[in-house]
Amino acid sequence: MSEALFQALPGQSLPIAEVAPSFARLAAGEVNSADFRATQLNLVLHLGSATALDEGMAVFADALAFAGRYPCRIFVTVPTDAPSSGEIFRAKLHSECFLAGDGGKMCCCEAVVIAYSPAGEARLESQVTAWLEGDLPVNHWFHRIPGARLRGAFQRLVRTAQRALFDSSVEDANYRVFLEGEQWRDLAHARTLSVRQTLGQHLAAHDPAQIIDLLDKVEIVGSQSLCGETRCLQHWLETRLNDCAALRGRTTHPNLSVIIEEPPHDPGLQIRWFDAGRHPLFTWTAASNLAEAVVDDRLGNRRLQFTLPLRQLAPGQALAEALFF
Image 1 (cartoon, rainbow, N blue to C red):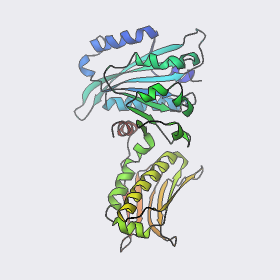
Image 2: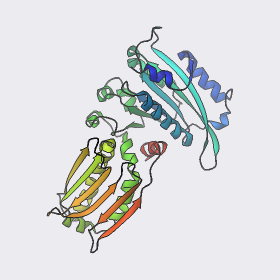
Image 3: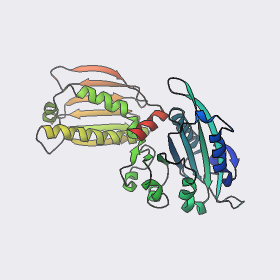
């Protein structure tokens, strides 16, 4: 289980009964000025038992980076084996202050790390709910939580969430089967924001009817590290091309296929359009870091070849994109 991760995450250990009073003291200014605590939301990060130590630390750092711009109360749940003490829940409290926003205003947030034994999973919802910042939105982020548990122990948490996040580049390809409700957002989709913007802006210069008349097949090729982004772009492109086909009065659309390359192959991210004769119409190629894209456009009367810079979202920005947009 994740005992090592619980021990490595920052925070001062305290009895479960002291968590709520500690929040009250922080809010009253016994530790930090209440002026710095304009909390906007609750963010509950659920780390699954398959989360590696370094990975869990990195995800927690992403949550803190988000809190530095959007002050929030963070909860991190970590499953562990039952400790020798027999405790069902154990807690650590971490408080951190940031210079947030363009004006460099000071803001502070609290993070509670909660270790729960197998016996505590069924009671996790009530325990976390008791500590939430009242009257503020509640958002849950599930990281390596088995999909079946989203319909089990975590079902009520999902149903009451304003947003529920997952990362399709981390989870299994069939993870979406377990997602119910409109509140779900994919962090991999959020990370493709710049890709979608640059593709949309460039292709908008072409007549949709011309695109549909010429286009027969679309291939999207991605590295294993970008498997979620690749599949998200497939869905996004399919939707946009269906819109183009509707403008042309057609109900059919070009054939789209996704190819995920396993290591050591690293194609980055490639989008390739072909006509019926398998001649290339449009290619868009980026390395795995998605820093820039090389475009080869033959859709118009003349061939265009150029490089486009891509704006990479920092992890905290990707969280904001997924939660708010």
